[in-house]
Image (cartoon, rainbow, N blue to C red; front, side, top):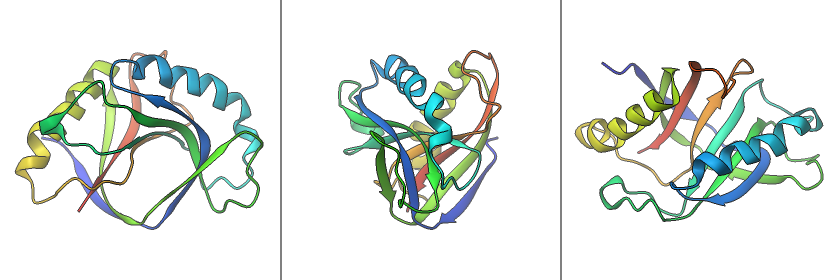
Length: 160
C-alpha cells in the first residue's frame, strides 16, 4: 500500500540549471546537471530549505501515449523565497500554485522507477485525481547520494 498525502502548495520559485532530456538519456543528463549545479549550491542566497530539487518540466505528459523519445526540460535546483539575486549562468522557474500528490520514498533507483510506473499506469488512473501539467519533481534531502544503493526522497506529482 502506497503511503501518500495531498498537499496544496503555493507558487514555487526555483533557481538552478536545466537541460533538454528524454527518457532514453535522463540517466546521463541528470548526473551531468548535478555535477554542474551542486558545487555552486552555496551561490544561491535565498534558499527556502535544505532540499535539492530534481525536476522534470514536460511539454505534455500522458502515460497512455508515453513516448520515451519525447523531450522535456530536466532541472537540478533549489526552491528559493525570491528571484532577486540569481547567480550568473543559472536559470529560474516559477511553478504555479496547486495540489500535489506527495509520496515519501525510500529505496533504490530500480524501486523508484517501478513505483513511478505504478503511480502513472495504475494508481493515478484508478484514483479520484487527474494529472496536472505543472512540473513533476523530487525533493532530495542533503543526505541524498546517488552512489548509495538506498536513498530517501519525496516524490511530488502535480494533480487536479
